[in-house]
Length: 263
Image 1 (tube, rainbow, N blue to C red):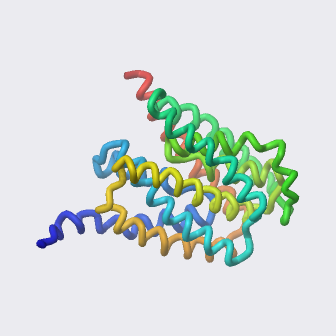
Image 2: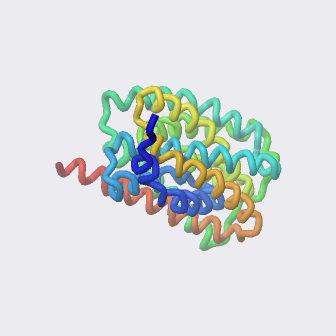
Protein backbone atom coordinates (compact mmCIF):
# COMPACT_ATOMS: atom_id res chain seq x y z
CA UNK A 1 0.00 0.00 0.00
CA UNK A 2 1.37 3.41 -1.01
CA UNK A 3 2.01 5.93 1.79
CA UNK A 4 1.04 9.54 1.27
CA UNK A 5 4.30 11.08 2.53
CA UNK A 6 3.14 14.61 1.81
CA UNK A 7 0.19 14.09 4.14
CA UNK A 8 2.20 12.54 6.98
CA UNK A 9 5.16 14.93 6.75
CA UNK A 10 3.12 18.12 6.35
CA UNK A 11 3.50 19.15 10.01
CA UNK A 12 7.17 18.23 10.52
CA UNK A 13 7.97 21.77 11.75
CA UNK A 14 5.85 21.16 14.87
CA UNK A 15 8.58 18.92 16.29
CA UNK A 16 10.94 21.77 17.32
CA UNK A 17 7.97 23.95 18.34
CA UNK A 18 6.66 21.19 20.62
CA UNK A 19 10.10 20.62 22.10
CA UNK A 20 10.51 24.28 23.11
CA UNK A 21 6.99 24.54 24.57
CA UNK A 22 7.52 21.35 26.62
CA UNK A 23 10.82 22.65 28.02
CA UNK A 24 9.18 25.87 29.24
CA UNK A 25 6.02 24.17 30.56
CA UNK A 26 7.74 21.35 32.44
CA UNK A 27 10.40 23.57 33.96
CA UNK A 28 7.91 26.10 35.35
CA UNK A 29 4.82 24.02 36.16
CA UNK A 30 2.03 24.98 33.75
CA UNK A 31 0.24 22.95 31.09
CA UNK A 32 1.72 23.44 27.64
CA UNK A 33 -1.32 22.09 25.83
CA UNK A 34 -3.09 25.43 25.90
CA UNK A 35 -0.23 26.99 23.94
CA UNK A 36 -0.75 24.44 21.17
CA UNK A 37 -4.44 25.29 20.77
CA UNK A 38 -3.98 28.79 19.25
CA UNK A 39 -1.11 27.48 17.12
CA UNK A 40 -3.32 24.72 15.72
CA UNK A 41 -6.48 26.80 15.43
CA UNK A 42 -5.20 30.25 14.41
CA UNK A 43 -1.85 29.33 12.85
CA UNK A 44 -2.72 26.08 11.06
CA UNK A 45 -6.48 26.71 10.54
CA UNK A 46 -7.48 23.47 12.26
CA UNK A 47 -11.07 23.32 13.61
CA UNK A 48 -11.35 24.20 17.30
CA UNK A 49 -12.54 20.74 18.42
CA UNK A 50 -9.53 19.09 16.77
CA UNK A 51 -7.21 21.83 18.06
CA UNK A 52 -8.29 21.31 21.67
CA UNK A 53 -8.25 17.49 21.48
CA UNK A 54 -4.88 17.30 19.71
CA UNK A 55 -3.44 19.93 22.06
CA UNK A 56 -4.54 17.92 25.10
CA UNK A 57 -3.16 14.69 23.57
CA UNK A 58 0.17 16.42 22.97
CA UNK A 59 0.13 17.75 26.51
CA UNK A 60 -0.70 14.28 27.87
CA UNK A 61 2.43 12.78 26.33
CA UNK A 62 4.67 15.64 27.45
CA UNK A 63 3.33 15.90 31.00
CA UNK A 64 3.62 12.13 31.44
CA UNK A 65 7.26 12.31 30.38
CA UNK A 66 7.90 15.17 32.79
CA UNK A 67 6.02 13.50 35.66
CA UNK A 68 8.08 10.32 35.31
CA UNK A 69 11.32 12.33 35.45
CA UNK A 70 10.15 14.31 38.50
CA UNK A 71 9.17 11.11 40.31
CA UNK A 72 12.63 9.73 39.59
CA UNK A 73 14.01 12.88 41.24
CA UNK A 74 11.65 12.27 44.22
CA UNK A 75 10.25 15.79 43.85
CA UNK A 76 6.56 14.84 43.84
CA UNK A 77 4.29 14.99 46.90
CA UNK A 78 2.85 11.57 46.02
CA UNK A 79 0.10 11.17 48.70
CA UNK A 80 -1.28 14.63 48.00
CA UNK A 81 -0.81 14.23 44.24
CA UNK A 82 -2.76 10.97 44.05
CA UNK A 83 -5.51 12.41 46.27
CA UNK A 84 -5.80 15.36 43.89
CA UNK A 85 -6.02 12.97 40.92
CA UNK A 86 -8.87 11.02 42.51
CA UNK A 87 -10.70 14.28 43.24
CA UNK A 88 -10.12 15.59 39.70
CA UNK A 89 -11.49 12.55 37.83
CA UNK A 90 -15.19 13.21 38.68
CA UNK A 91 -14.74 16.81 37.52
CA UNK A 92 -13.29 15.58 34.22
CA UNK A 93 -16.24 13.23 33.65
CA UNK A 94 -18.76 15.96 34.48
CA UNK A 95 -16.89 18.45 32.30
CA UNK A 96 -17.01 16.11 29.33
CA UNK A 97 -20.80 16.03 29.59
CA UNK A 98 -21.16 19.76 30.31
CA UNK A 99 -19.69 20.47 26.87
CA UNK A 100 -22.91 19.11 25.41
CA UNK A 101 -25.04 21.84 27.04
CA UNK A 102 -22.69 24.81 27.65
CA UNK A 103 -20.63 26.59 25.02
CA UNK A 104 -16.90 26.06 25.59
CA UNK A 105 -16.21 29.76 24.94
CA UNK A 106 -18.28 30.72 27.99
CA UNK A 107 -16.28 28.29 30.12
CA UNK A 108 -13.05 29.72 28.70
CA UNK A 109 -14.18 33.20 29.69
CA UNK A 110 -14.82 32.06 33.28
CA UNK A 111 -11.55 30.14 33.47
CA UNK A 112 -9.70 33.11 31.99
CA UNK A 113 -10.66 35.35 34.91
CA UNK A 114 -9.86 32.60 37.46
CA UNK A 115 -6.36 31.86 36.21
CA UNK A 116 -5.62 35.54 35.53
CA UNK A 117 -6.22 36.12 39.23
CA UNK A 118 -4.00 33.16 40.15
CA UNK A 119 -1.26 34.38 37.81
CA UNK A 120 -1.43 37.84 39.40
CA UNK A 121 -1.13 36.35 42.90
CA UNK A 122 1.90 34.29 41.89
CA UNK A 123 3.55 37.24 40.16
CA UNK A 124 3.01 39.37 43.29
CA UNK A 125 4.52 36.58 45.40
CA UNK A 126 7.55 36.44 43.10
CA UNK A 127 8.02 40.21 43.41
CA UNK A 128 7.85 39.93 47.22
CA UNK A 129 9.99 36.75 47.12
CA UNK A 130 7.40 34.69 48.95
CA UNK A 131 7.83 31.00 48.20
CA UNK A 132 6.54 27.71 49.55
CA UNK A 133 8.92 26.04 51.97
CA UNK A 134 7.38 22.70 53.02
CA UNK A 135 8.00 19.15 51.83
CA UNK A 136 6.38 15.82 52.73
CA UNK A 137 3.21 17.72 53.63
CA UNK A 138 0.61 15.73 55.66
CA UNK A 139 -2.31 14.50 53.58
CA UNK A 140 -4.86 16.12 55.90
CA UNK A 141 -3.64 19.55 54.84
CA UNK A 142 -5.50 19.15 51.55
CA UNK A 143 -8.93 18.88 53.20
CA UNK A 144 -9.84 22.57 52.99
CA UNK A 145 -8.77 22.66 49.33
CA UNK A 146 -10.67 19.55 48.20
CA UNK A 147 -12.98 21.64 46.01
CA UNK A 148 -10.10 22.79 43.76
CA UNK A 149 -9.16 19.54 41.90
CA UNK A 150 -12.74 18.71 40.76
CA UNK A 151 -13.21 22.27 39.47
CA UNK A 152 -9.81 22.20 37.77
CA UNK A 153 -10.66 18.84 36.20
CA UNK A 154 -13.96 20.22 34.91
CA UNK A 155 -12.20 23.19 33.29
CA UNK A 156 -9.51 20.93 31.79
CA UNK A 157 -12.09 18.65 30.20
CA UNK A 158 -14.02 21.56 28.71
CA UNK A 159 -11.26 23.99 27.74
CA UNK A 160 -8.03 21.97 27.70
CA UNK A 161 -6.51 23.89 30.62
CA UNK A 162 -6.96 24.23 34.35
CA UNK A 163 -5.39 21.33 36.23
CA UNK A 164 -1.83 22.64 36.33
CA UNK A 165 -2.83 26.30 36.40
CA UNK A 166 -5.06 25.83 39.46
CA UNK A 167 -3.18 23.00 41.20
CA UNK A 168 0.23 24.70 41.34
CA UNK A 169 -1.00 27.85 43.17
CA UNK A 170 -3.12 25.69 45.48
CA UNK A 171 -0.08 23.61 46.43
CA UNK A 172 2.40 26.45 46.79
CA UNK A 173 0.30 29.39 47.94
CA UNK A 174 -2.36 27.47 49.85
CA UNK A 175 -0.41 24.53 51.29
CA UNK A 176 3.04 26.21 51.33
CA UNK A 177 4.67 23.37 49.36
CA UNK A 178 8.14 24.18 48.01
CA UNK A 179 7.88 25.83 44.59
CA UNK A 180 9.67 23.09 42.66
CA UNK A 181 7.79 20.32 44.47
CA UNK A 182 4.50 22.13 43.80
CA UNK A 183 5.40 22.33 40.09
CA UNK A 184 6.29 18.63 39.95
CA UNK A 185 3.15 17.53 41.79
CA UNK A 186 0.90 19.70 39.59
CA UNK A 187 2.51 18.16 36.49
CA UNK A 188 1.74 14.64 37.78
CA UNK A 189 -1.89 15.59 38.42
CA UNK A 190 -2.13 17.14 34.95
CA UNK A 191 -0.56 14.09 33.28
CA UNK A 192 -2.96 11.55 34.80
CA UNK A 193 -6.00 13.78 34.34
CA UNK A 194 -5.08 14.38 30.71
CA UNK A 195 -5.04 10.64 30.02
CA UNK A 196 -8.71 10.44 31.00
CA UNK A 197 -9.56 13.40 28.74
CA UNK A 198 -7.48 12.06 25.83
CA UNK A 199 -9.14 8.64 25.96
CA UNK A 200 -12.53 10.35 25.65
CA UNK A 201 -11.29 12.51 22.76
CA UNK A 202 -9.72 9.51 21.03
CA UNK A 203 -13.05 7.72 21.18
CA UNK A 204 -14.73 10.79 19.66
CA UNK A 205 -12.18 10.87 16.80
CA UNK A 206 -11.02 14.47 17.37
CA UNK A 207 -7.26 13.81 17.68
CA UNK A 208 -5.15 14.35 14.54
CA UNK A 209 -2.39 11.70 14.32
CA UNK A 210 -0.59 13.50 11.48
CA UNK A 211 0.29 16.26 13.96
CA UNK A 212 0.77 14.08 17.03
CA UNK A 213 3.49 11.99 15.35
CA UNK A 214 5.70 15.11 15.45
CA UNK A 215 4.50 16.90 18.59
CA UNK A 216 4.51 13.68 20.64
CA UNK A 217 8.26 12.98 20.33
CA UNK A 218 8.93 16.71 20.66
CA UNK A 219 7.22 17.04 24.03
CA UNK A 220 8.72 13.78 25.33
CA UNK A 221 12.20 15.17 24.70
CA UNK A 222 11.30 18.70 25.84
CA UNK A 223 9.75 17.46 29.09
CA UNK A 224 12.91 15.56 30.01
CA UNK A 225 15.02 18.63 29.31
CA UNK A 226 12.61 20.89 31.22
CA UNK A 227 12.65 18.65 34.30
CA UNK A 228 16.46 18.57 34.27
CA UNK A 229 16.73 22.35 33.75
CA UNK A 230 14.29 23.08 36.59
CA UNK A 231 16.79 21.85 39.18
CA UNK A 232 19.08 24.76 38.33
CA UNK A 233 16.50 27.53 37.91
CA UNK A 234 15.92 30.03 40.74
CA UNK A 235 12.43 29.79 42.25
CA UNK A 236 11.72 33.44 41.57
CA UNK A 237 12.36 32.99 37.83
CA UNK A 238 10.15 29.89 37.74
CA UNK A 239 7.27 31.78 39.39
CA UNK A 240 7.64 34.69 36.96
CA UNK A 241 7.64 32.36 33.94
CA UNK A 242 4.62 30.52 35.35
CA UNK A 243 2.77 33.78 35.99
CA UNK A 244 3.49 35.29 32.56
CA UNK A 245 2.61 32.07 30.71
CA UNK A 246 -0.63 31.55 32.65
CA UNK A 247 -1.58 35.23 32.28
CA UNK A 248 -1.07 34.91 28.51
CA UNK A 249 -3.36 31.88 28.48
CA UNK A 250 -5.94 33.80 30.55
CA UNK A 251 -5.92 36.77 28.19
CA UNK A 252 -6.37 34.46 25.20
CA UNK A 253 -9.33 32.76 26.91
CA UNK A 254 -10.93 36.06 27.90
CA UNK A 255 -10.46 37.36 24.36
CA UNK A 256 -12.08 34.21 22.91
CA UNK A 257 -14.97 34.43 25.35
CA UNK A 258 -15.63 38.13 24.74
CA UNK A 259 -15.45 37.58 20.98
CA UNK A 260 -18.04 34.83 21.32
CA UNK A 261 -20.32 37.05 23.43
CA UNK A 262 -20.12 39.89 20.89
CA UNK A 263 -21.10 37.53 18.09
